[in-house]
Length: 169
Image (cartoon, rainbow, N blue to C red; front, side, top):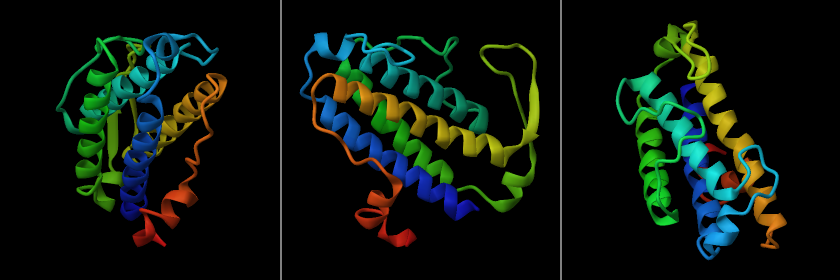
């Protein structure tokens, strides 16, 4: 199971790299245009992903920035957001490399931002959610890029495995 999560951490960084490269050339108007995604714009959705990744990583490790809302806007521009994304992806990869089967089977308690009631369950489902959540919102980012008339991206896990992720095949 730990190898599975290490693969997802590497995949996550790879997919985010493609997504951010595709978004680099967008104007501020395009980045902030509401295209109907859950958080509206590409910028807001990308920001949500960094914010929630930081929330989960703080829950997992007790370290890193803490945000108070899921739609917090801590980044002034795309350059700052991009730097934060890359740093968070590196941190996620390093953390995934430390996971053990024992840790994944232990109980884990956290308090959601949206509800002050503590939740307790095994760590493994929280880690699975963490990576699934990223994939979910990257799909919205992909759709937003398409709505902006940008070329489609191949973000599937299998494409990662056939290129940069061959070590997991």
